[in-house]
Image (tube, rainbow, N blue to C red):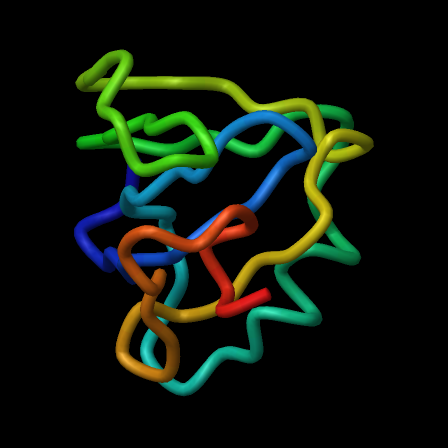
Amino acid sequence: MSDFKTQVLILTSHQRITGDIALLPGARLTDYMCETKAFLAVTDAVVEDLTGRQIMTAGFLNIHRDHIQLIAPAEHAAFVPGTRSGTGG
């Protein structure tokens, strides 16, 4: 991966994932997702179930883009502990 890392929060139908993607400073996450092929490469990943229970960590993880329901830069978002969706709902 590149030296440029951006920490992101990812929500799928069954997991909450925090990790880093290779995103250049100033680049838009939306553009990155539009250019991503079938899988999104995430490093230093922490995977939790929707209750917030950690179920795995991985130095590298591929996430199929079709399973991503929500993705946001970690500096602009946070999972809310104890919520079913992790997003306050």
